Image (spheres, rainbow, N blue to C red):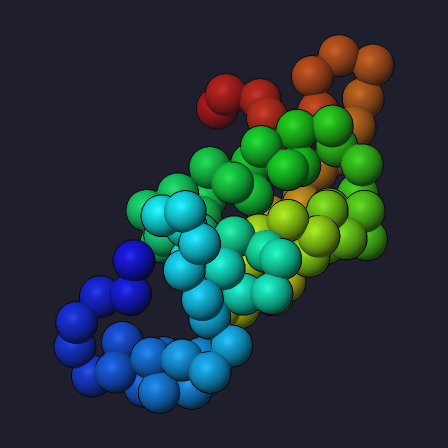
Length: 93
C-alpha cells in the first residue's frame, strides 16, 4: 500500500509508529488506510448523498485515512449544487 521511493520512505518513517496491520488491512487507529488508486472513488462514494463539505469530512474522518484526505474533500464537494434533479457535481458534461 505504501509504495517504494523517496516520498514513500518519508511516509513510512513518519507514520510507521501509528500504522498497524490487522487481517490484511493497514490501519491508522480504527481507520482503514486506503491505497491511492481508490482515493477518488472513496471520496465520490462518501459524497454520494450530497450532504455538504462538513458532513463529508466527518464521514471520511470516521472510517478511512490517507495523507491529505481532508484537504481533498473541499475541492470535490464545493462545486456541488444540489437541485431537484441531479446535483451539478454529478452531471455528465
